[in-house]
Length: 130
Image 1 (tube, helix red, strand yellow):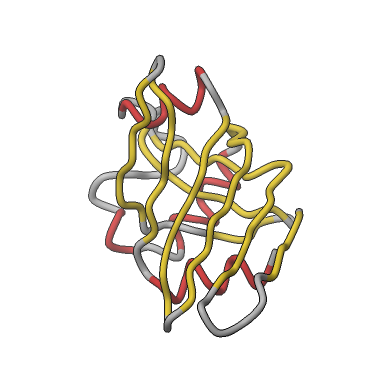
Image 2 (cartoon, rainbow, N blue to C red):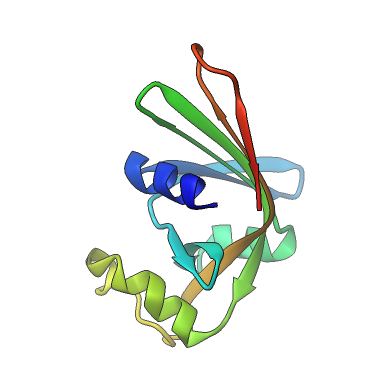
């Protein structure tokens, strides 16, 4: 899991895919955190992406970094604890104008039943499960 965290943190921007009905939705994301041995992402509860993850928690993430790419499939599980929100937000001071732990809008999701493939054209694919 730490390797997946480092990959996503280093790439800066990753792409999160959700489903809305029968339509896939993809958008750039940049938040990632390790808290209590779980990998977390963050968004606002008022956003469509949060509504999509609550309706169908199956997500995929894709990103590239230094000639390698990651494909990560998981279930996004909402963690409503203020402690989890505060931990993630502490690492992203640029978000403090939009989000605050316990504000009723900040949403952090941890990734469950995750399978990450780290791939390149020159190395064997590595699969990480957590």
